[in-house]
Length: 566
Image (cartoon, rainbow, N blue to C red):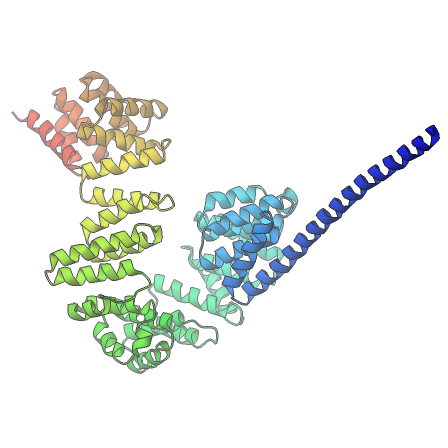
């Protein structure tokens, strides 16, 4: 009985543990199978995304890559596709994708170099340099590393270093004509006649290479324009350029431009030919109309527009180019006709052009309504606001330009650019209050920038806005860099506004005589000397008249001069 019980117990335990083992094995099988399935899906979809990208089907490529990333966030293949798409479409996010791949593949020097090259493409040189610093020592004699370093050096305008790096790349890959092209372009822009001649020879030689002749010829034309070479020689180069099988519409318009400049008898017939071919493509038509507008051929363009089918004129971005033609002709009824109630891809532009036409016809209330609609439609997108800013700059609508720029500062990726433009605008117009508003934002965005902090302290003192805080900032900055004449001047004026004449004069006299002769510094030194009734003040104040001064500074200078009057 007892033996039977033990056998039963052992059998039960074997069944129990066997069942558990079977369940564990089953779960492992399912999990392993799921993992195998995910890897298969990843390979399949990455292959599909890559193939679609190579065929120019960017929508499919993006969809396939994003599907992979939804399944596996750290997919290297999908991240590479997203980076390539960003680079092709001009999206700065590509740099982030390249960085992600480099982090996932830290031993892949090629992926790190791709990260650097992508950063250069989007003019992010600090990121490019950070990427190059991560390239393993064993890969720093590779052709790719030297080429990437050359690109960064060019971006930094370090010509000697760039030439050295391209030369190293060519030494390692003597048959790589793309590197020869880059070196030739670099040399041909040199101020050294010998270097320029060497670059020109390289580019002339590359015109015999079917892969590089287009870029080499373009570079020779650009160099010729910069050097003010004979227009007929450049026209001959442009004629050859536009005849290449891979020439673009831009190349053809360049030839058209040269023909227009030298008043070539064949200009009209070539323009007619261009009109016929461009009418088949909305982008080509837009490009040609825009060129005609810049060359003041608006009447010719208006006649050409009459021959283009309505369905072609309706395709974006043609309506924008057509509106610009009518604006330059000041044909307000036609401008209203092509904008009012029309269907534009960028509706904020339509509202802006309509506002211009209505304002020109003294329909102020209606124009204000259209402008408000333009701002409302553009405000949510930084690129739209940037396009609007460009338009307003061309039209010289100062009030609206400032409004659009302040709206642009709300977009982090455009903030610095917008604030810099606002600063230049207010400085040009001697608007001290406007400068103060901008400097507050700049100081908030970059609190470690001493130049910004110094300017904020100076403007604050001139406006008597938070003067105690301005004095504290001025003292702190001067303490960090006492030899800086701008910082010393601001600190001295801060002391003077608090009655510290002796200390202010001491700070100013710590500067060199050359520094004191700078008109901007002279102004404040003269103010200090005038407060001390020092006869030397007049000389420095008169020199200060040569400085670009704000209204408040001019008032201080004149007040100081009046103290010296007998």
